[in-house]
Length: 194
Picture (spheres, rainbow, N blue to C red):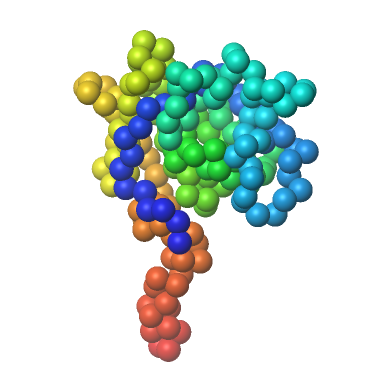
């Protein structure tokens, strides 16, 4: 079982770049592993580090100013090739949610299947979040999964977001698909016996 997700209040790491593809999230050369371990250190590898492996000072994840469990990214996040490793890398780097105005379908599904919450907001809300983060690096977002709302903490800037009921239940219970099936085993057995 995974960590349950009900509410999250956190500062953010703002990445106002559109069309971030899965090869930028986790470059293909790191896809040899078949377990989730170690991917977080290579999240945005080519943006975070120079060719000698030294952190690039101008990349937001290397900034001492921005930290948090919520990654806020530009429109069309997770486009490109299908790779579950992209969700593994984001989770492995300590993020529990990603906020954008649009996610590629395959990335969104991979994120949900791996316990990472993708929150789709309006372009106006996304702009408000980026603006608030630029003005105050300690700005926090509050995500309430049961209520399906996201807000800039301490303000009246708030929106609802959509999530499939099944995936919502899995996130709130800390289940992957197998855990969910095990949780309803008696119901399955009753059905099979009919």
